[in-house]
Length: 257
Image (cartoon, rainbow, N blue to C red; front, side, top):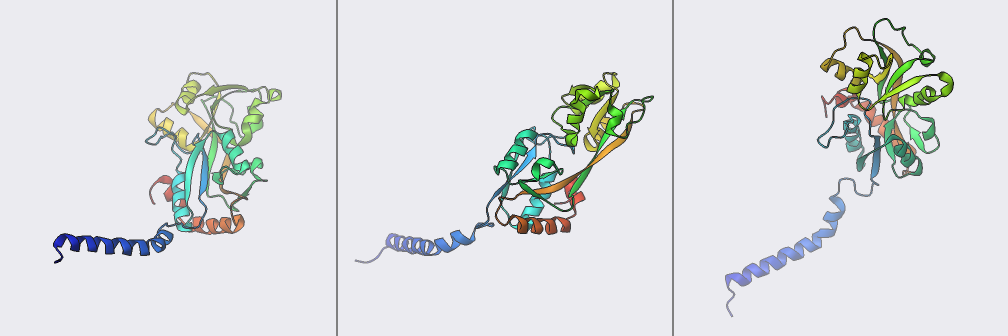
């Protein structure tokens, strides 16, 4: 029987399938960029200390995610990011649900996590006030004062000092940065605690005449890696070397990738 064009096509397809099957396992093993490396979760807080801007989902923007993307790409480590309320985030880092973050050097992380030797970013906590109010240079200067804070921040542990009844601090809580500055302008508190980035954005959009500030403290942010992650110390050493090779400030500002 003389072969026709359809039988030729059929034989060609069979040969192609056989070729793909024979090559398949090698391709499947080499294709994933991070084959064999355990994916980790970057847990980050649902309040940004960097900006009032939000992403396309309406979540507070975290510019440290850009730094993480550049760092993990060079390290060849698969990862994903997930946002949590601060208390839950710390719990998940402690129990190993999450294995990475970029945070202040909190005492609650010492048992569960490794921290980088040097900070990867920093921001200032400022105390804003109207003219005529005495400057605040230490937390003790807040004793007996009326202050305004923003919901969701622990202020690097300062909130426990503010909440201590022995310090007689009247704390008025705002839900947003913009609301907090409106409260300050209206005299509903004498001092407002806020971080540099969000405060500058609010005051640029709606200046308050004569508003003044002092820097209360500087908050350094470190790489945080769970000790339970495989070869944690070696991985931390590698991440530290990589992050130091990056232009961190430009990446965080969104001017470089």
